[in-house]
Length: 291
Image (cartoon, rainbow, N blue to C red; front, top):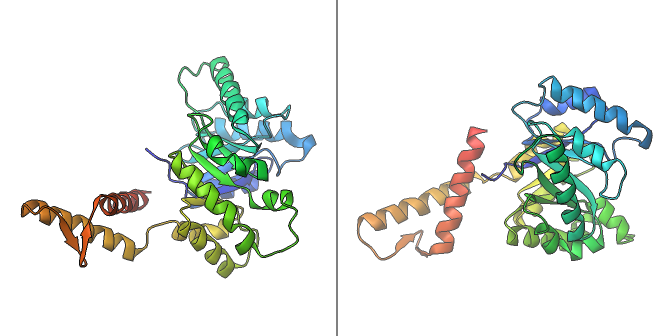
């Protein structure tokens, strides 16, 4: 079953307080960050803290990922080894530029799984699309390994790589968002939006995440627990959408009972795409309700 990833909250892996706050939050998933949040000299200590947290059972029952260092980093293999625990779902991979990076990560992960006695392909991969090369290769990256379950947009790194001088995020993020959403959905994986860094700007957060949801995104990376409720709401079906889906499915059931060749709802003929979307919305709403 597809993971519920409306909100993926980063937690610096070297900070016990932030780890505890993340684990007690309402985020769908927690991402323990061994990359940007941890200084170069603190990687080993962060991995030790994360191992202790996992060993203590603090992550049990949560959907948890680890953001490793880049595929070409000497820290990356140790990051993967740290995550060899049943409470870790997989790894968020930064600085990906091509599907070759996913092939490499898949092979490396397979070797480390074998070393740790993991006999099946257990751990998932979520590549971060953070630069123009990765964006142009997004479709191939999404299909670069059967372990891939989502594509994440790293908006600020992308903006830096594009050498932007504008600060209008709504403009310069629109194209990459659309490309990532299409690339991910065409590969059968979930597109996950970039974090919103204005911590106290709730109106701006809502506007940005509503636009991402309208473009087809399934969720967003999050940097603070105070954003979680709005993000979860934006990436959940609205009451109106759930009611519409229920009406469509009821109309289909009625048509079948009456032997009709097609169903009508709200004056429109219900064709296969409308039925499929209605079933998706209905099923997704039920999964969220059980969360």
